[in-house]
Image (cartoon, rainbow, N blue to C red):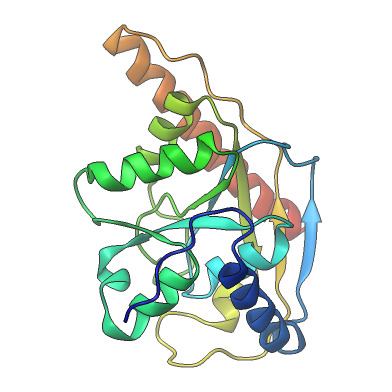
Length: 216
């Protein structure tokens, strides 16, 4: 029998998974967490650039509340990964195109006051550089009027680049920027598209600036 996915912010299966990852990962990566501003009390989106398969674990470790991650079906549907994704309450989504069930699940999670984790690039970066962002993150933020928290993980690519099959012990720093408030959703298609573009640009700039400030 397959394990049902987590459905509540305090699900014991998520907490068990987080504690196990913490027990294994903290001595190996010696993570440091940096918050630029207080986190919102209600639901929000955390958006991070994506350079390793362990980015989700770093974000989950750093945040005090459970995170529901959007995971592409390329990984979610793999036999070796599916039980793990379900245990953590991940929401499967297609790499390309719109999946209405994923959109509904993501909106419901935010409306319940949960944290939604998104990697806006949609795929791993193979060189450590940030790739163009997809629009899904801004569309969800504007539709739910939930803030977006930019995030980045310094040292992640050095520890576990896509070319390696096993991570190296490296210190990682997980940093979160100031919340970006989405503009009010408008019925005018041109204005809505322009607002989405501004929010997406601000998010990309915030993550880039956050990574740059960590290198100062």
